[in-house]
Structure formats: C-alpha cells, structure tokens
Image (cartoon, rainbow, N blue to C red; front, side, top):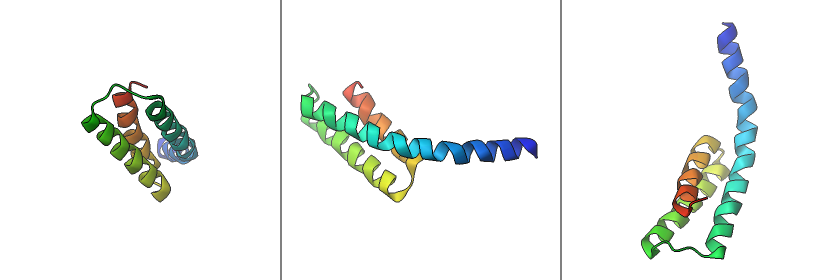
Length: 79
C-alpha cells in the first residue's frame, strides 16, 4: 500500500513538470525551424505536424503524449 501511495504521489507531482516542459519544447522546435534546417520538405512537414500535434495535446492536458510527440520532432531536428 505504501508503494502505491508513493507511486501516486510521484505521478501527481510529475504532471506539472511535464506541463511546463511542453512550451519549452515547442519554443525549441520553433527556434530550430526559424534558424533553418537541411531537412527535406517531407521531413519539414512531418516536424511541423508533430509540433502542432504536441501543441494540441498540451492544450488538451495530455502532457505525457505531448512530451513524447514533441520529442519525435526534436529528434528529427537534431535538438
């Protein structure tokens, strides 16, 4: 029971941290796109779609999925 309570507390405390990470990830993606990249047009479209999906997930409160989606876009950009 103690372990379950501890796990629940960790999850509840981590949620605001993830919520704060989303805007920073979005800003990093936007900055990288503004600076220019050597990605193909297809990959640029994919990055933009992932960025937009991450923003939507963040706005909907699904911060875990947002962080994962934005991480994909950042990986494609090499950041």
